[in-house]
Length: 293
Image (spheres, rainbow, N blue to C red):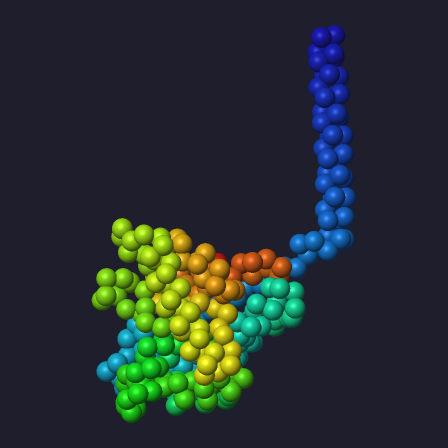
């Protein structure tokens, strides 16, 4: 008799648990369906890799972590095109995040740091050939120097302001801010990092003065102020992003190697990761980074 009672009791408890589970599940599905119906959070995340190039040169003595050949660059562009990637600009990405535009199914951003003169001779023609777009980050002091001095040695020369002005008319090239004169680590400060013991007031004044000078120079020569900040060496401090946000920048490039996941309507552009393209690996080997999470 006792065994029968216990069995019935366990059966009742089990039945009640199943009923409660069914009620909970039904409620959850209904709520989820309603959530999707009103259009909230229905836009999937977009996978966005960003590739970081620096110097492009056909002098094999210079090939390094930050310098590749034009043949290697062309191989990269060919690989991306064959795999269906579509290069976009930061203007397109920002517009998408603000709900003002669309981006292709397999977007990628091709970025070039420092503004070497070889960009005009070796990169620009390949952009046209492979239907690519490039985000080019300019160092203002380098542009000043090579505007004043006629030196077109492509092993090291940077773009002059007249060349930058001409590039600004190419719809395949988007110019961004790489600081005026903070691309250095030999003056007691590495890139945009705050010095040890430096007051926040002094640090903020230094950063704002340098970056705003570059903003004004680029505007003077191109008629457009950059909306993306590219920190030299990827070096910055906890306060730096808030400073550039306050200056009106809508995005920040870092040097952290990661794939970005973008969702429309979210402000997720202040820590964009990039993969540095060094010499040595084939396009197939290097672009395995696109498969990483």
